[in-house]
Image (cartoon, rainbow, N blue to C red; front, side, top):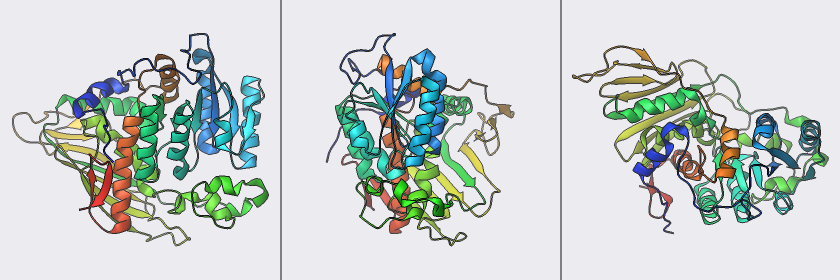
Length: 413
């Protein structure tokens, strides 16, 4: 399948300068096919109302008055979460939101302009694609997908239906990373050869008290969606992060935030090849995903991204970018000549300029009115999807994976 991604490396750098895209999508319209005026309300439905959604709902509340937005519906397969979210909406907005456990029903509700998708990973892209085809704009939590097939489908639906989509990789809206991106794009580091990123946590991440989940509170069939049918399993429901059916593991759950920054910093959208290794070395608790993981991704302009995560020890975290003139430490937000050489070597250590961060949610709400591409648009979502899926498939298959830009597919090579 050959698809025109319609964006070059140069275009991507231009549109992501300053952390907010400036490229418009033409005469795009909102869900009701009428351009919204400043006094028209944006009606939003929350799909998936658990812990992360609670944070996103609070962000909508904080921007509601200025952006004239309101939550008008809650969709969740878990009744307690749904009821809790409905209570908050009533208190915050003084309205009675619709409710359902069926996202397809929610997408058919009248007067809905947009949806927030905060479900488990395997549901992100399928619901995003359905929302786009229903004419809804969307805020979709990261990672955008669990498989690259899902990402392609969502990408195509969003582009064909000209929807405004913000992906929840909010680090690109943070001031420190915006400043780091400016430094990298300025060329001060010289020729960049590698990124070294390591995230370490000493805990059985995502193992939760699943025994408290009651079957009568769960719409199990709606939870499974397109996944294989199986008897109700409270562990799979609450601890879905641990199972291959529902996510691609550490690359998607955590790596997506960092893979998303590579195109922002460099303009290289997709890695061209990758390898990975790891295993379940510490937490023998029934999880199917590695608790210790390391991937190396090679990018077309000639640099490696080393990304590792471990759940058995919390020391040794890192995020450094290495060039011929020096090193940028994105954890300390510090630029130095460490490791550099030659006449252009950075002379002194210097802190990055302090830039203000932006509200990722407010950016999306504003872009729904302006019809400009938001900070983490569908192009950014698809780019991090390629990296996440490449790393995961390299680990699952034990093979070096390559990305074919023309077919938008991953294959061994």
